[in-house]
Amino acid sequence: MFRISPRRSLLLVLVAFTFAAFAVVMLANHSWNGYHWARQSNPFNVKMGNNVGSLWQTALTNASADWSQSTVLNTTIVAGGTRPKNCRPTSGQDEICSARYGNTGWLGLAQIWLTTGSHIAQGVVKLNDYYFSPGSQYDTASWRALVTCQEIGHTLGLDHQDTNFDNPNLGTCMDYTSNPDGPPANTSPNKHDYDELVTIYTHLDSFTSVGQTIKVNGRAYESLEARPASTIGCWRFAAPKTSLSLVLACLRRFA
Ligand SMILES: [Zn+2]
Ligand SMILES: [Zn+2]
Image (cartoon, rainbow, N blue to C red; front, side):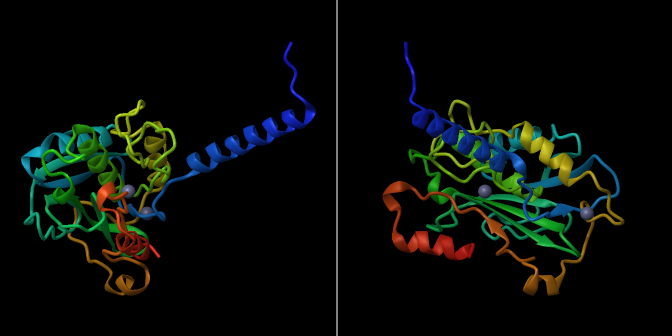
């Protein structure tokens, strides 16, 4: 017969409690600061300008289809409106771009600009070919899927569910991982992402920003973080290239 001492059982209870608390914290809410597209009815449609190279087309198609499974929104891929290297925004929609943006420290990056309040006026996703060159560790379908899905998710108003690279996958592209294949794979949204979108978009607005030519709030640029610096995209760097200065640059970006 196996008995555990009282002290040990107390420890186990504490451990179990800690894990339970963790699970709640991870799943409670992952809205990105309440940022969302303004619209007067659901479901609404977010156009995604296609400015990505051939190696990204499948990831973009799949990510668009995945996010469109949301009950509150759809995404449609449209002709690109910018040169990929510049990746300039188009009012009322996303532009999705791939190019060699250099040794920046990020695999992918999402940028949004706000109009009044927390309402998104336009969004941009940059997928950094610098780290996805043929034969590199990220040159896989699942890495491309993870990054594309996650950055688009940010432009819809979602934050990460979890930012620990080394714990088990949650089965969502909004979860940092060192192994997107899992299992479970972190290459598509999960139910919690769709639930969070419903939470974010349950209220209706008195005006529409999505699909509209809408003024970016210049003042907000200064004080409400309605600027490209409102950016999430601080990925683990390619391990051999990790340097202290890169890590510091990445941390400073979000300080
Ligand atoms: Zn609103
Ligand atoms: Zn992210």
